[in-house]
Length: 324
Image (tube, rainbow, N blue to C red; front, side, top):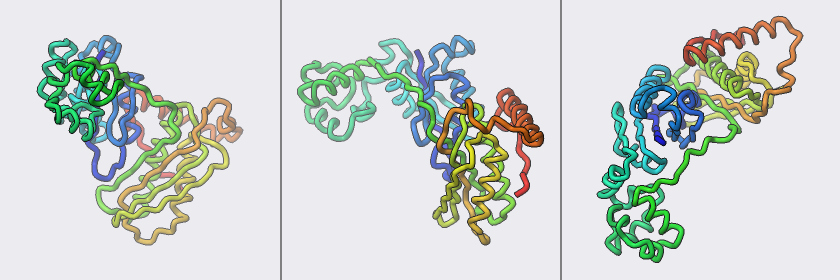
């Protein structure tokens, strides 16, 4: 079993990894656990055999795709467990994946000279206690009797510490449950005054949200718009939809309505973000029923666009600007 620990190097404007980046990881494995704000764990169990590539090769593909599709670089650590992958990440750098081999001797060698604070879960208080007794490295902790560690830090914590210091990594990647919300952000390269550019950003954000909702077979009941300004202040508005939807055109109309209601006058906007909330399964939702031939045509176009994105990537289809 190989685990990847990925940390995206996000631009300053991003507060969290865009959903598309997590979606990119899910193309390689269905077992992905988000580590907010900018990381994730990926279980490659079966993926190496399926793709015919090693963990290092898959990590390289992930890095290239993140750069090509989102303009975001990343650092990646790999190991036979979640703890070791997290520790490997600290030694990784852009373009070079740090890998802890699965062989026990290699794991022990990787851990031996590291300070106890390098082990995830060991806080300052525990580290001070261990160092007071000369257990300042993981190698020394590994060679200490289990009973000694349990007396120092407690029975359960002592056993976990002893196992991890000896390379026993029982951690597992826990896939995130159904999202309660989806968010996408559109930062500007410079503080933007042009309302037309604001609207184009809203179209793009609404299109991404709609595509992700449809891919998850979900609909949203509430849409929230956040406008971030040059002075780092922000305005947030929410609107409950007349009926739950996953259609980009409907989401865009609601986003436009909230934007126009703000009455921005020459505002220097640094970023716009849309959040879809109140998510429910799309099955049986009334939004699927329509007798309007124009509306039906729009939805057919969406289906084709979704197929193209699934095959060629999220930027295969670029939305046009809808009329306000």
